[in-house]
Length: 104
Image 1 (cartoon, one colour):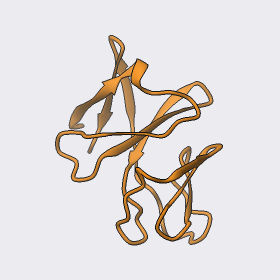
Image 2 (cartoon, one colour):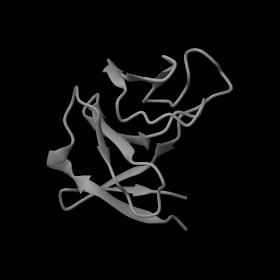
Image 3 (cartoon, one colour):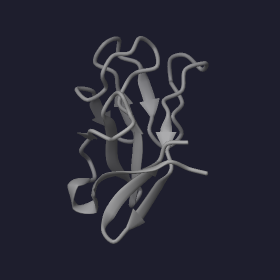
Image 4 (tube, one colour):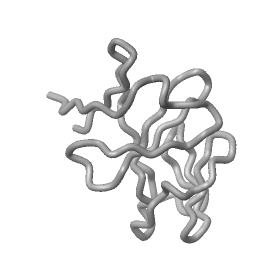
């Protein structure tokens, strides 16, 4: 059974912008954006060295870590620099104009 948590309202997520939100039960803020018309939510910490991605740059469908420049595809979580690294993505559910994620 999934542990579903509220992230934000749909209107708070904008295509072309990477926004961070505090979510109950998650240590680091999560990141949200719109890609290909769908809301994507991922962990807000780089799996390389626990650097916050909240200050990272969004380039197309990728977030660039401000710490060491690692690039993560937000659609897949895959790292373009080291294949063994993967950015966690959360399954998203939209309910009554609100964005919810499944943590488990």
